[in-house]
Length: 106
Picture 1 (cartoon, one colour):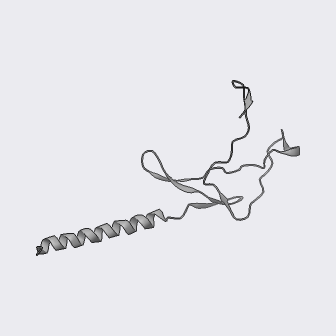
Picture 2: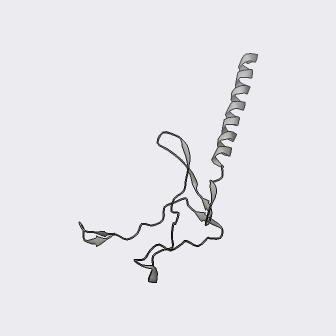
Picture 3: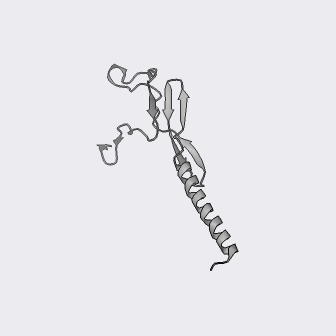
């Protein structure tokens, strides 16, 4: 038969283990950060820095309308407000660039 102090220790260890599992699950379910800017809502993502600190990351946020058609080589045009939430969890594709070393557009 096990001693009473050992049973108490085992009971406390089991409760602590269950608490840590539940706390970890709840923390991992934290909602993505959302902020309101002049043009609408942005939804970002929580990231961890190289020093282990959590921060809210917002990527791929447009600052003007795309310079296509008659707007090419002109001043940036005011961005129109968007409806819903802008997904700012990942960067947008980079603009095409000519690489003179390999003589290709990348």
